Amino acid sequence: MSDIVIELDNGAVVGSTSKNTIVFKGIPYAKPPINELRWRPPVQLDPWSEALQAKEYSKSAWQLGVDTKLFIAEIINQSGFSAIKRNLFKTVLSRFGQSNESEDCLYLNIRTPSESVQAGYPVMIWIHGGDHQDGSGNGFPYETDVFCDEGAILVTINYRLGVMGFLCHPELSLESADGISGNYGMLDQIAALKWVQENIAAFGGDPKQVTIFGESAGGESVAHLLTSPLAEGLFQRAIIESAANSGQMIHQTTPVLHHDSGEQIGKNLADNLVPGPNQIQALRELSASQIMEEVRGEEDFARRSFFPVIDGLILPMSPFQAFREGKEHDVPLLVGSNSDEASLFWPHMPSPLIEYREREPDASQMKELIQFEFREDACLIDDVYNGIMNCDRMAQQDLLGDSLFGAPAFYYASLHSRKNTNTFLYYFNQVPPSSKQTAGAYHAAEIGYVFDIKSPVFPKSQQGKRLAKIMSRTWAQFAKTGNPNKTDLPVWDAFQDESAGWMVYGRDIGQDKVFKVLQYGALNRRLERQLDQLPIRANKDL
Image (cartoon, rainbow, N blue to C red; front, top):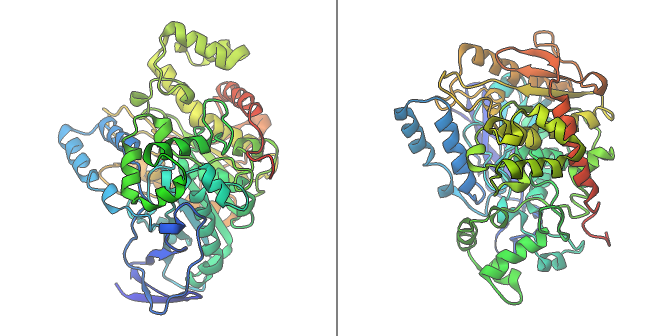
């Protein structure tokens, strides 16, 4: 390895070369959000005098860890591994995570081709998933050269998560000139995008060819950035992988549907930790570990999880509503989901609808639930999810996966195609190679193929290795041109409502008609009924 020095306006950074890639780790893009900067918008960096050694990853944001541990355990349990391998992988994975956390987490990593630092490469900014509570842009599985090999720069970012990134509270809203609180993690993402605009040319990147892409909460974040006025012009293309319909309708000040307001959720935490007046100042005087101990000890999911909120400014409305009104940014969009999205959730969420995640309905309750939620579509739901009224497990699992991920992807594609003809829908159905696997094409499984991960934890058959090459090259091609088509890649037609089609990525690779139009139609009619119940803006005075 040899060093390479890049001069930035704030100071020099030193990275290292590895094969055909230049790697920079742990570059700060904002001041550490600690002490009085906790729960405030990110603050611009001061210049530094000595060269910054960008050779080690920063610490990751504080993690909730509760639900992610269950998710990872299910990947290992359901992938068809032997008992010896299962125990080995669980031991290895248990070493990652909560030991390397800090509020000082606003850093990014860059991997760029080494041929030239003046080439004007397209830039791909990855926003990690983790339900907005967990995750990191550091290390595995993003230490890959597949995008650099295709002539693109990969940037991975860290941002504040959970209670540190999305706490709302009336006192925080009073601190703000705009009367808003929460969404600090989203402001971190926007700050990282601005940093890229100002600095990526020094690394050989083209700030006018930026693609944001992410999976799960990262996919939701892409949808948020597509609908935030503050992010307009900071990117030119977007990829949404399996964005959930779980925390997309929470308002800062107003309780709606099954959600308390963001401020009420924050007040609940503060009342437990620091009852009395001046709660935010008291919370800022606590250590992060004290706050996280309280949050992690909360058994109620709704009281331990903190999400982006509709605040009328950073997020003017639900991203679904923004797409519905045609107010999303006009950029090419690639979006999709996986065939078995809920296979890993189902053991811990025995309800076919996320709003009822704590309930396990019997047959009589299920019939009432389906009739209440789907109204005139209840019979259709009973038909297309055969056995749902009798609580058939697979029917419930399929309904949960479609309602959370598949139908929202279809909704985004359908609406955005009316604004931008470069809109592309995919469906990933590649399963683990073991004949004993039960996970199917589970939530997040496509990441191993998009990044062409080479790991025994995520094994691939020869056909799977070919699929990974195709998907990673397709994603890079989209980043270059806003269109995934290239002469040596499968032909992929843009999405059209009147003849809805998608690209299928699995054992068979190619275009096909969307065979879930009826399912997605019923689910999205329910979604729009929910949207009709939401106040458009969280703060009436904005």
